[in-house]
Length: 470
Image 1 (cartoon, rainbow, N blue to C red):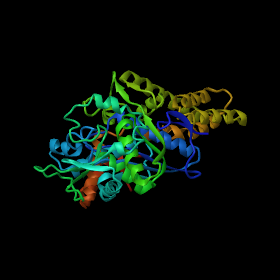
Image 2 (cartoon, rainbow, N blue to C red; image 1 turned 30 degrees about the vertical axis):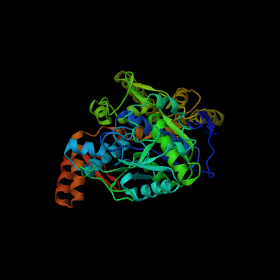
Image 3 (cartoon, one colour; image 1 turned 180 degrees about the vertical axis):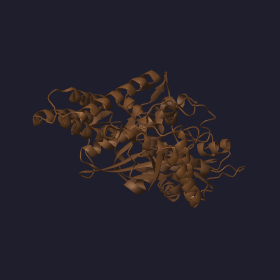
Image 4 (cartoon, helix red, strand yellow; image 1 turned 90 degrees about the vertical axis):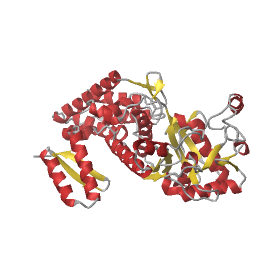
């Protein structure tokens, strides 16, 4: 029986899907104005573990993740510049170029972390009409009003507004700055549609019934999840910072429009901290996955590090802790490699195997308790009552959840070898040459990669790089 902590009820609840055997799940993905940092990837990792646990339990999962490429302002409270437009100005690129570049980096990092790709990635700019339609719906039902800078949601019209975050709205009012709430009817009101500045043409703006502008950040997730997963679905995930504003607003606008419950289970992952502060792009205090790779760490070393803590507990990052995780992961691979070479093929008592399987299932179904699940794996490997063959089979089974490529690393050690940055850059240039139909240049780059000892293989998502066999 799978039990998960539901932020909506503030309790660990038994998971019961809306449709037997099937799960519909949505998570808030990256805002692609900058590199995603390893704190962001802690959230994406926990969502990956959830998907893996659901599948391990036999559920058929339809998983959607959004990519925010418009509407996310530098403040969650409808103040400041659009993060995408701001980044484009700073870097001297178009917004579309910024979106494409950082999306591609994100997708590359997802693969390196061995995070399962969602069934569908949705871009906010691909669902503008759906977002406009939802704002119209809210307008027709009397939930909106217009200010000088946009169309706003009137949270006083939605009695259950505070139910997810359990907000102290009165306390918020007492601490409000007058200039902040000047045109808002309520301090918690939020923008559904923002008007383009009169003295400036934005790169991303659209016609709407209320004037030229762009959607607010919150409306995109409601519109896209409704379009793909329906009005009412099972699970919505994100970082803990999304709970008080973004997810609270999603519930308000979705349920006000549809008249139905939006989501049954809300799951939120805790922060990765640097010192006593959360890792954050806004403060500039963040570390990218590539920077870890450049320092000689495998992305799977970092994945192993994340497995050492429960997703609902704050986790402090340090190089010393990552070194310890790297050592533990490499030790695990070494143990498995030794088992592979062993001739111990004795038959293990089925009750012993079932006992370890049961302990593992109990751990992962106890609100995704990865530290305990990992201890089950280590206890199994150290056991004197299980054959080498059965240990490898159990490790492979458990790795469907851990995602550490355990057996791949044992059977093909070169598969986990680091790809030199020079080779990765050449492969990316080759892909661009192919997209430009410069096949002569693409072939030349492929040959250059070959001389460096690697093969580049075309895939439906782009390419993969492997160490040459000869």
